[in-house]
Amino acid sequence: MLAPVRFVRHGKSTVAFSVGLHDGQWWLHVSLGHPERMPTYMDLAYVKRIFVGRDRQAVQRVPHVNIHTRVLHLWASLEPAGDGLPAFGKFGTI
Image (cartoon, rainbow, N blue to C red; front, side, top):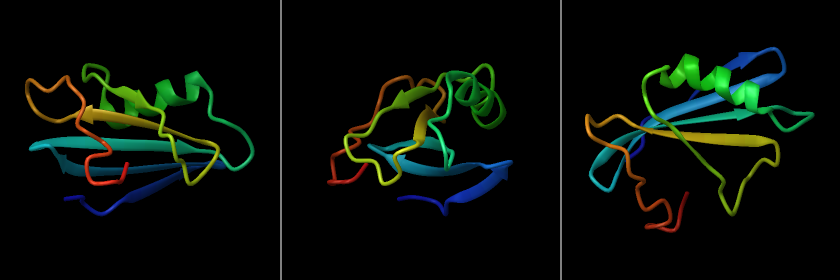
């Protein structure tokens, strides 16, 4: 179950974010893309602070199949005690 994806543009960069139910827990997915270069660590850290928050843990997921070559992905559990990862490939999708 996945909520609609929302997009935000900042300069040439695009942030996409959505919330979905994975393995019975709600997760926030945030991706950051740039048309000309791979986003830097500082770019991703900035997006994490804005979209995930300073106090919520997020993990960077490097998919084995990525539709866009210059996109980085963050996942954050929205459950009170959620710090594990869902089975991303359980249904054949990431």
